[in-house]
Amino acid sequence: MSGRPINLCPEEILTGAAARDAVARGRALPLAGGPLAFAAVEVLERMADGSAESRYLAIAELKDWAARRGRAAEIERTLETIAAARAPWAGFALDRPIVMGILNVTPDSFSDGGAYVDPARALAHGRAMIEAGADIVDIGGESTRPGADATPLDEELRRVIPIVAALARDGVTISVDTRRMPVMKAALDAGARIINDVTALTGDADSLALAVASGAPLVLMHMAGKPRTMQEAPRYDDVAMDVLAYLEARIAACEAAGIAKSRIAVDPGIGFGKHPIEHNLPLLRRVALLHTTGCAVLLGLSRKQFIGRVSRNEPAGERIAGSVAGALWGLSQGVQILRVHDVAETRQALAVRRAILMSVA
Figure 1 (cartoon, rainbow, N blue to C red):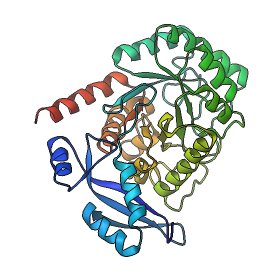
Figure 2 (figure 1 turned 30 degrees about the vertical axis):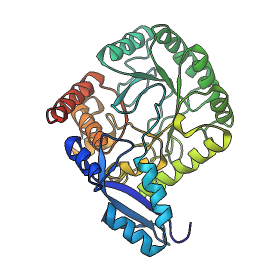
Figure 3 (figure 1 turned 135 degrees about the horizontal axis):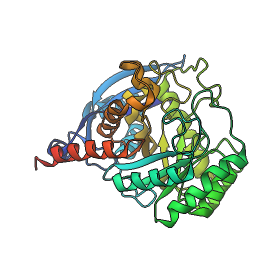
Figure 4 (figure 1 turned 45 degrees about the horizontal axis):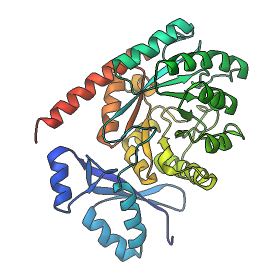
């Protein structure tokens, strides 16, 4: 590739009949295979100082602009990647929102303060989330909240594996939220199907090899630093482009090891090594940029600190409405997987959204 790095963030995202009509007329392209479509892009060109120069172009204008710059083939490949239909991930077709319910079996979770550290309560909550409409239950035994200390390996295993095994016997699709290979392996052996790693398989030297051998679907998340220190003055040249570059590098490492891109979902890591306002908000504004990876996109912003910061500083348990609003924003940008604490409330919002969209043929 010649010239400065260029990324494309889908804009003018359309739904329903408007999306179908715009695609049929050649005015828009499908977003990750549809049902949304995008009629324009924000062109983000990396400058020498690391920042991004931005311009907005309609699809037809973009192709003319790229031809004048000698970048036509490169831009066409990027558009094809953004528009291409995504293969099913973890057995789920991605033409509808997938809801991943969060089950923290830790005494120090930021969101629930250890409400489900008791195994009986954890199992009941996991089953309740499935009843409320969760497609996946994501089980984690180590808090990765800002400032958290590492949990001893034996303790993480003790918390997680019995819950995984019990819910797997119920037929629940389980992801294990861990950065340690022994926990990944034990959870997969106990019936988990998905590896969700906040370090994108960099936290344990053996995790990539396990991912290759297991064939398990993956979630690769962006995190700057480690949980204990990640909120100490995080810095980015351009947060959205920096997160994208990191995830692209991790995808490339996985592909080089033999992991198909269709097994991978990417997560921008809202709140992980990011200032609540200065970084999280512009990253969410450009979350559609992640479609250029060609992977499924997962968004986990449920109950995060920034929701209180832009509202009235509500504690975590009172951020449900903001969490649902953020989830709906993600869906409007083509996000396929929502990681949430409040499954029933999220499902209700999705049902209303779908009913409105389906009301016009």
